[in-house]
Image 1 (cartoon, rainbow, N blue to C red):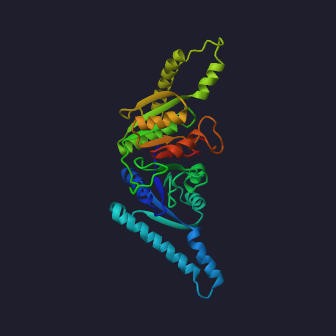
Image 2 (spheres, rainbow, N blue to C red; image 1 turned 90 degrees about the vertical axis):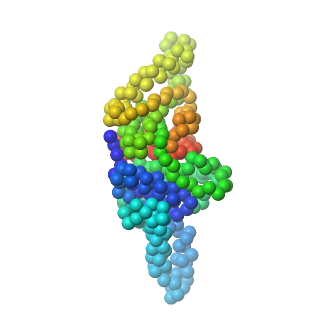
Length: 322
């Protein structure tokens, strides 16, 4: 059964940072993982100092100021850990950089080389709607490691303007969304590891997509004899049998209580519907689907789920099946 050994949290000391740390340290404590905490000081916070240093080099010590800024952020992170997660006090590696957050996070991921990256779907800006190109979405698209995008399902609303603070939730139900792509067994193995680690129930969800149904109907022989009512029950049973075989091949056949759900329709809508119906606390996806595109395509199922899922989304590394 695949497992993670090194976990990295990306925090910016916004309202979402305690939630990000909560999920990170919760998993680390249950699975005895090494923990690295990454934080990026945005250039907008240091550019005025750079400009002042250029204009008044005799009066402004830019290097000293920047070092103090780093020390201050490290102290804030340590205080957050000490007050909320004292069992990890002094047990984490903290790294601070300055620059454009998305680019620096990806650079630090390459340097640290964790197995799993955890970051919130929002940060300091707390935008009421997602913007293409935001740091969270940019990292989700381009990160070559498994990435756990966390969010609080109780306050996940684009126009939310309340006063509740995002908090990590208990992981009791996990959904592994599979499509029989080359990543299916890896998804199942990772989901099984997380279920075993957290004590959660594992639900395996598969959707027979509308495009696939249209292709089958157009290629059905003899022509004009296709009956969806007759086809779907048999197709669902065949896929259930195949999934049961892949669950065993993934090494999680002994995991108790695995539930299999097979539906038809739009994959994104069916997966998001299943998260609500099954009261999921985490959703696990592969890096890509059947298309195996080199890059993420805006509007793809995985990207839509990232944007709209009310529960944390774990997207696996695109390098796991090369």
